[in-house]
Image 1: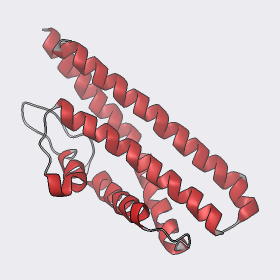
Image 2 (image 1 turned 180 degrees about the vertical axis):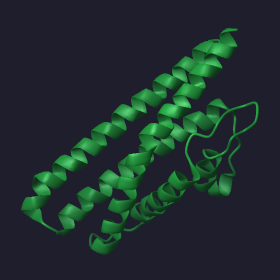
Image 3 (image 1 turned 30 degrees about the vertical axis):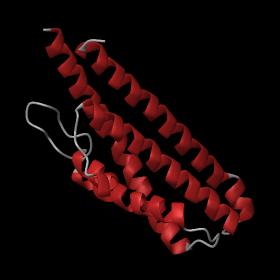
Length: 165
C-alpha cells in the first residue's frame, strides 16, 4: 500500500469510528428517554450510563491510537493513555495538524480518568453527582468532536492530494 492509500485508509477508519460513536450516542439517548425513565436513579441505570461513557471514550482512544501509529508518534509506556491525548492536540510541523483541541482534550481527560476508575472499581454503587458531571462533560465532547474529526479528515485529504502530486 502506498502513502496515498494509507491516508485513504485512515480517513475510512475515522469514518467508521464516527459511525460507532454515533451508535453509542443514539443508544445512550434512547436509554435516557425510555428505560431510564422507568428505572430511575438505580444501580442498574448507573451501570448502563457508565458503560456508555466508557465505550464512547474507548472508541475515541482507539481511533487516536490509530492516528498516532500512522504518524509514528512515540508514546511513553508508563502513561501512554494521557500521553496519547496530549499528542492528539499537537500540530507537528511538516507532519500533521492537531486532531483535537486543548479544550476537548481537557474534557476527554475526565472521561479517561473515569474509564480507569471503572476498570478497577468493582462496587456497583455509583455516585450520581459524578455521573451527572461526566454526562455534562460528555455532552460538551459530543458538541465538539464531530467538527474536530471533520477538520482532521480535511487535513488528511489535503495531505493525500499533496502525496498524489
